[in-house]
Image 1 (cartoon, rainbow, N blue to C red):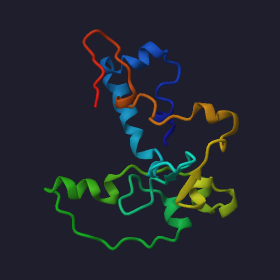
Image 2: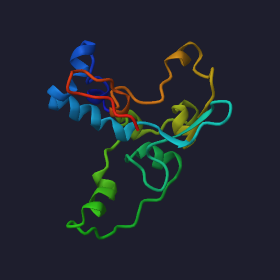
Image 3: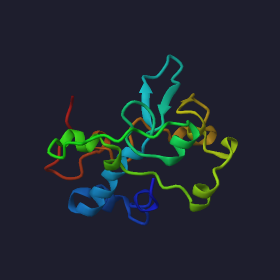
Image 4: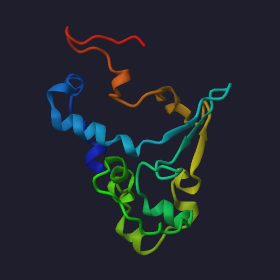
Length: 162
């Protein structure tokens, strides 16, 4: 995730962040984080283990990642004609997806597979309860400020029960 998106809420107090409806730029930055999140591959097992998938993998990747293509030796796609009047076709094209930026040194010399992050070594990872150690208590089912996880901030905003 680009640093600007990752640190969009840095230094803001909770009230300023939760009044996101008043700040269009902050709302755009938080929604721009979505493609970079690891995706849930399947529902949790009986022991609460979850499988997460790299956003650059699968039949419809959310981001373009040069590291993923290099590590997993994905061949370059054949050039295809895209109908620019078809909104769905243009948004599905690789060029329309956000690109994961990798350090310049890594672009020149690829890192050994052992030095890559765990999600880059395999397209999916399994996280079991306790795998995060002391940080396991911070594990969340929804991302920070996800609309389904927000609580009402004012008298005109209601919790929808679905």
